Image (cartoon, rainbow over all chains, first blue to last red; front, side, top):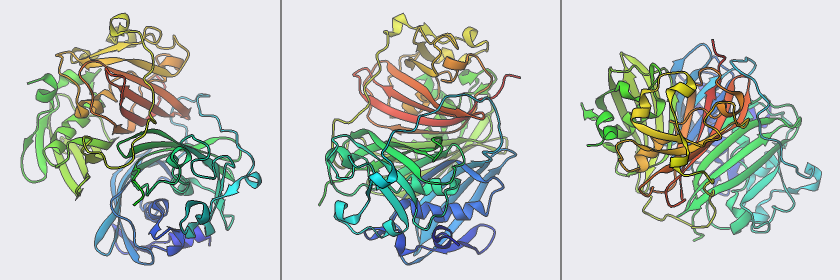
Length: 265
Length: 265
């Protein structure tokens, strides 16, 4: 069993409820990574709906998770249709809700309408071995999660503030070589450093309010390329838009989040 | 009272429930416009939370609404914090759920962190009087909603398939001159023709699965400019990204949806 499967494993309690454990190995500093928290929820949803692929997945982060502590996940199927399952879910620890999720699942192996050549081309990036590994040293914090995920940053963007552009790009894969699938793309959309750092340098904490991921295609094995840009930042509220491409160059997910860009205190 | 306030008016039944009416004047062909349905919900949310502005608003469209029929809206405040209210809501007609919503509300008059000049510039467009009014004739359907909203399309994009580019842009405002506010921006993000029409011509029905709007700034009075692009269309599933700018040129909302692009039958 891969580390990702093991650390997001949930056990069914009843029709609606599952229990799991928030493993401290996925922390960024003292808090569990948000993409890891939603992956525990996505494991419970996979046990609850008929369709395999998260076409649309929205997470609201209400409170930080608590590392090393059990969690409960509640999954409520809003509508189970022929081509789509719509589901609401939440993650709780110590009696408090941490994450609220709404998602639509479908089957990406089924064609449901018109096809086209409209897509977003994969950005050009040096190969992973010419990129710079994400490390806690660069950001000045401890990042246990880098033992679970290789994140290889574009060499011009590895140092916060160096590029002058609010963009972060790089390669990502699991350190135990588990291959990507549509569920792990949800995680990969929330595991790069915040894109405002590219222009503004190491500012403060950048908590996500809401993240939406659209999985577009099932990924081929190998590295996943991610690119994330800040579109708009005003009064401490930013919009970041991102995309993921697989080893064949196909767009496999896009994502957008609203986050806060707080002063370092 | 403006037509928008009148047609989205809701009356409280109890702590969680409101009742309203789906007015047939906001139809596109035989179905109520999706942006209109979520506006009935946004009216109920406004009565339920302390914060005035929808910072993040996600709607899943489960079934078409029924014009001319009463509706019930259920609002459930997930978390009421100091700077954010997170809320779930749903719209029901004839015993069936039509829309599921999750949203985070805040106060855009409060600065909560770092400011910057990062934004998306307003696209250049001919003035409204040089644009072409959206009409049912062009699309070959009846659009009662054009009596509620002026939608003035870029002259190069008014005819489906004419531009060869999957992009739609134009100006929008209420026909009764009600000025825009942050609540009406949610509506404006779902009232332009689908952007795939620009490249592919008048194809079939383009139902939205999920739409997320981020309101970025409170709009100045006057026309709102909208631009919407298809980023990716494969096997009948499209991602459309849009933005709204106010009469001062400021980005006031961005949005993204996943929709189906179905064959004309």
